[in-house]
Amino acid sequence: MAHDVFISYASRDKQVADTICDSLERANIKCWIAPRDINPGQEWPEAIVEGINSSKALVLIFSDNANNSKDVAKEIYLAISLNLDLFPVKVKNSEPTGVMKYYLADIKWSDATKQTLD
Image 1 (cartoon, rainbow, N blue to C red):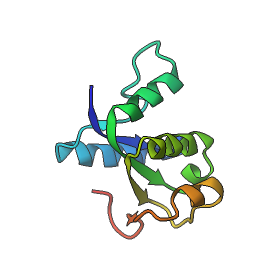
Image 2 (cartoon, helix red, strand yellow):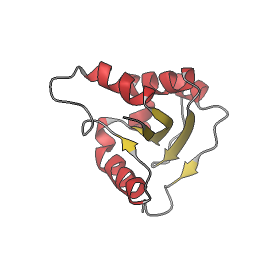
Image 3 (cartoon, rainbow, N blue to C red):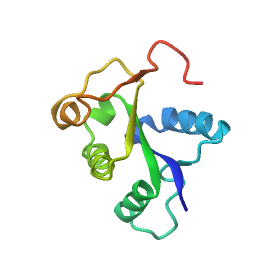
């Protein structure tokens, strides 16, 4: 099943990710988000790869939590390797470091730190 976007986020930011997912889906943008779209018994890494492969773009919920998550970095890498469009949404005043700084160096950001997520 094809999705418009894969939502990448750190588990500590689940509430924010769910809010953004709900807003996108109200706008008829079909989202893939864990754990909702992982089938019972399916291996988590397999599901993530399938979710990214079935999407046209990746929305990154960016915070310090995401910045420090190896799993989020892997998801960004996979999306880049598939030439997916990346849409980072900054939800906390933090800057990318390490591999995230590299992956997101020339990407335009949406800043949700000064407004409501809806």
